[in-house]
Structure formats: structure tokens, C-alpha cells
Image (cartoon, rainbow, N blue to C red):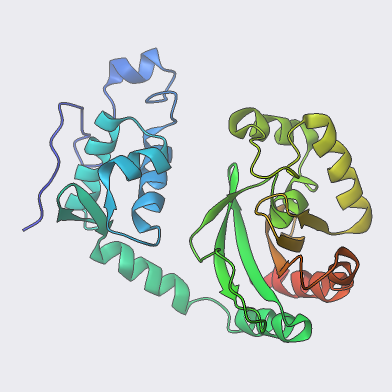
Length: 276
């Protein structure tokens, strides 16, 4: 039998996360600085569903950026609804309804997505990633490994910053400047390597270059020895929904060589656009 965390926090009458009327009035409809109840619930679901589960409560709280009391309350509702399972020892994993939802979404994806990514991987011989944009991060949803005798640390489900990744920078380059400033005001520009762009001025100049050439480079900005080229996938309105990258290691592929993948990369993003 699953255990349900208890808390003195308010639950709505239908069992979903909620707040009292007084709390909503005081906070303008928001449960806390961490966001609305729905926003927090979705982040907690993402944290629970991340690879490597079941996850400890402290890790779920940290990944979702939600306070402990709210995390308890939301987990209780998600467990009752079958989206989360309590695995004991304060660890939580994906429940049957979440797994069913994942299977339904996966089965409905066009078969062409995998073939487009496979063609790009075979053309370049390098690792290929497909990621979707969500808030201040991107999330890898597909990865095809390189033909080379090495493996990168990235994995499906991993969330990455926008300012340090080729896909992330290509997405930022297609967003309005006011939205870019808002995203960065939340996420900041933390340094991950000596090559990371950590000032708004440096990033603005980089995004102008990305817009001009149609692709972005991550030249050891997110991880030492890793070099990537990425391009955004644009939706019907021209807004970026995600992106694709080709990932190499610096000791095998030069900057000039990886830039030569740009035509194949852009062709892949254009082919993927109507499928996402």
C-alpha cells in the first residue's frame, strides 16, 4: 500500500493542489513565489519522472524549486490520483497513470521524427539531440549516440540551461528581447566552464551572430571538451518550440568542421517543424 505524505496545507475539495481563498487573495492568485499550484505540480511531476528514480524528497524539492510543505501537499494529491508512487524511505517515482500517459504520448508521435534524427546522425557520424523548450531550460527528449568511440554524459530527460547550450542559444535568438531578459532574470547566467558567456552584453552579441548565421555553437561553454552546433525548431507562428544539436568532442572535430554540419542540421529542423 502506498503511503501519502501528510501536511497541514490546504487541499481543494476535488483532491487537487489548492490554496485557501484568503491565500489566493493575498498572493494575487499565486500560491507562493514558486508559482501557481499548477506550475508547482508540473515541476514536481517533471522531477519525479526524471531518469534515475525513484527520487528522494529532498531531490524532488530541489529540482522543482518548491518548498517542503507544498511539495508534501502536491505529492499527496498526485499519489491519490495515481500519477506518483511512494516507494518508501521518502522516495517517489512515476505512478501508473503517468506511465500510461507517457506511453500514449510516445505512441502518438509521428514515425518521421526518428527517421529525420537518424538521417542527421548518419550524415554527421556524431551524437544528435532533440530538445524541447520549457521556461528557463531545455529538456532532451531524444538522443542518438555518435559513431565515435566515446559517449557524452547527456541523457533523455536531462534539463539544461539556455545560455550555455547550442540549442538553448538558438532558441533565445528567436525570442523577443524582453522575454529573453525576463528568462535570464530568473535563471541568471551561471558559469559552467571558463568559456561560458556570463554577461548580458556577451550573450546579446552572441545571439545577434546566431540570428545572422542561422545556427548556434556551444564551444566548451557547457562542458569541457564538448563542442555542439544547434538550430531552433520553429512553430507555425515562428516561435521556437525546441531545437536539434550535433554534439562532438573538441579533440576529434574542429570548430570549422562542426560548422560544416549546419546545412544538414537546418534541413533537419525544417523537416521536424510540422511534426512537433
